Image (tube, rainbow, N blue to C red; front, side, top):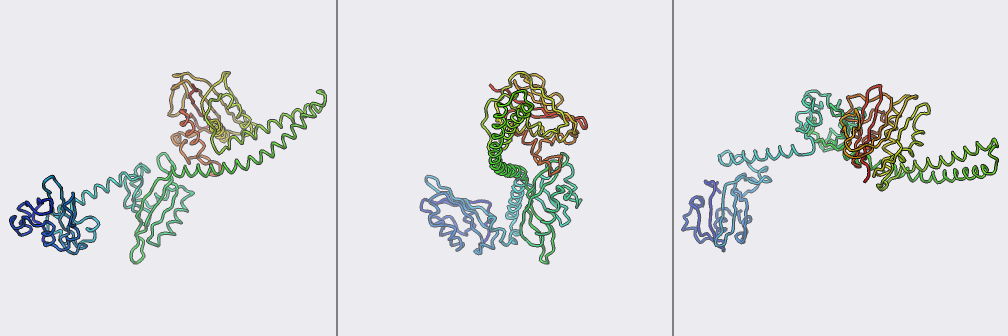
Length: 500
């Protein structure tokens, strides 16, 4: 079938599908006058032009709105050109619009393309379609939550989508020239894992995936990447590179970390509950016996002081174990109004265990109640997290100060704190936990609350202590900040609004 010589033509048909009107361009294309085709079935006329169109045009196509593509060649898989038929039903007549068209996408990729060059309109249509496809692909890549890449065997990149600028804003351009730069971005502990996966999977044309951590400059934020790549291998088994995508899975890793931590805490709670039951029974026996004998001997007896101390210590031991159990609850307690003075005072027994005996702890909790609506277990964990950080920062003879005070709305708070408010947004409580330890370098101020970030050894810190503190404070409409100087010490500030 020859290609039509028109941009668009119309044919009018009645409710039975017979032609009642047609444009001159349609008549010229089918090689008949209007009088010759008037009254004929449109479907039968089209099938007479090309037998293969019988399948695409059903008998009852004219009973409702309809559209289809009709290839010019009977060999549909080899046809890149055709016509697009659109039928619209109106009250007294139906209108068919016919226009030249390229084959649909799924057919065009298998079609013979040589006939495109013989038709300028088809070539123009091809360019327009390519432009639209390129625009859609660009939008897709721009909004896709990942980074598309093509990487050479030497680890340089021949292509990186725009998302790479968010991860490496300063040196993303160097990744196309410096073969060692990408490996340098991978966290030291994960480089061997990366190299092992690449070596293991690069000999076969199969997509593989693995995850590792990278350090994003200039803020040195740790990001978990899911790396999905496919080796590009020639027929002679030569590796040309990789096509793939990087996906930031940091949030997913945080969730997995919390889940595994929750499972561990659940197991620890079960174990500790059993231990505390046995331990409490032992302490109860010691307490009962010491109380019995303490009441039997005269107060001036030399044994009285010793038995009194045993009795007191047994009671304190039971309280301490109960508080440790509270910290390992797998489910948070319900929120309620608590006096911060009492909560922090209760923690001082545990603080005494955490801090070296030679270190000094100064407290100032004021003299009035400080009622705050919060979840008790989480708050206790926040205080202990900050105390543990202070302990790790001070020397054996260091000092830690804990201060609690009420503040009025608009009153100055967090004096000297980094990137924080300077006046209380509401009536609230301010808690200061200070130490005279090693301090924090200004270079890492912006990232100390980031998940996975820690200045401690990997065996000593998870990078989640301060992050969890921040999440707790934000969840309670509170604010956490800090001030610090190297070799001078650090102060953490907590602000929580008062209840009611």
